[in-house]
Amino acid sequence: MSDQFRIKSVDEIKDLFKELHSKFEEYKVILLEGDMGAGKTTFIKAYTQYREIVDVPSSPTFGLVNEYRDSENNIMYHFDLYRVEDEEELYDIGFEEYLDSGNLCFIEWPGIAENFIPIKHILLNLLIEANEDRTINVSYQPN
Image 1 (cartoon, one colour):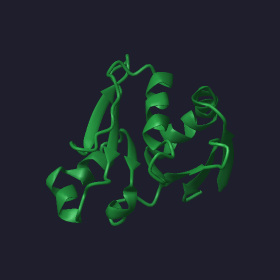
Image 2 (cartoon, one colour; image 1 turned 120 degrees about the horizontal axis):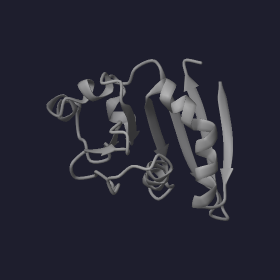
Image 3 (tube, one colour; image 1 turned 60 degrees about the vertical axis):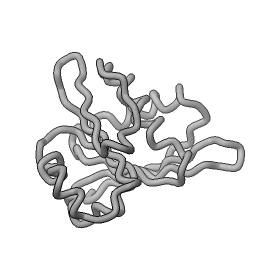
């Protein structure tokens, strides 16, 4: 199953979460793909605002993972695997344990982690359109 959404502003992303939130809770592992600057981190930041996360989100590019908690102490993990060179680095940070934790895991640049990704996940592919709008293709694996 798949969906497609067209976003013209960050404010519209919040409307998208109303549709996707229940799916995120069901699937738990959310992969984000797209070119540099497509809005992967912005998408996650907007979601943390939607969920009223008390921590200030930032890109975990240098630390690989950030942990956020909402007001009810639910945990969400945010991975940025852009600089990961091999799977060994993922083993070193306990990547599998994060994915098996039952907590929501957002993963930017997931290609290097292909062997770790559970069968059940959501893939968000963010595309920049000529007018700077974003198209977000959402596929649910398995549906």
